[in-house]
Length: 230
Ligand code: DC
Image 1 (cartoon, rainbow, N blue to C red):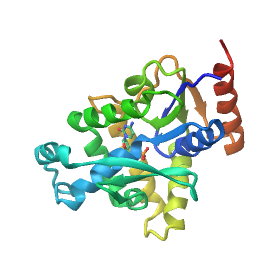
Image 2: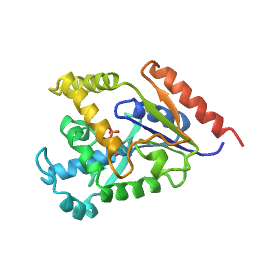
Image 3: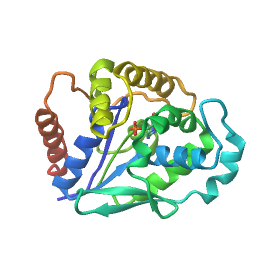
């Protein structure tokens, strides 16, 4: 069986990472959550007072990029690799609302993207990888054998994210969550560097109507067809 590269792109909260994780586990591939990397850089900027709702010291962040070390370490209890920022596990912290509100600004910076894309390409060098994000099929792995583009309505996605916040005990409203989803859609699709677009050869999956199991089976079947072809 050959190893392939699987790129899963799409809007936020479309369930990309759930599918990507399941697929990686089933195929015994490495899973990389590229969004976690943009979130971890954002967290670093927050910790060093380089970004808030009011300010963004972009040049300072660019100058500090060399001090930001990101890594992933597999957690067997969770079944996926958690992200580490300068040696500290920040998997939980990067999911909070504050990071979600600021991450699009950081992800717009070409220098940040360049650094993270290089690291992502290195992680996928030997194939056998499932990576999810916004520009994986277009920029990071333009020759990925399988590209999936996931969509779902903003309301459906906000509901999913809101339920996650509630489960973690975060004090946010559904309206706030929906606004954040729409705001990020806007920035992600209109930014100059690597905007979120569907690659020409990507297969679109609208999961507004599909169950998680149906989505997984659809994507898994596509992957197996490619893996088993000559
Ligand atoms: O997938 P996510 O919601 O965790 O991603 C967080 C942010 O990072 C998202 O608003 C856009 C950005 N991102 C990106 O620009 N490119 C990627 N490959 C992954 C995420």
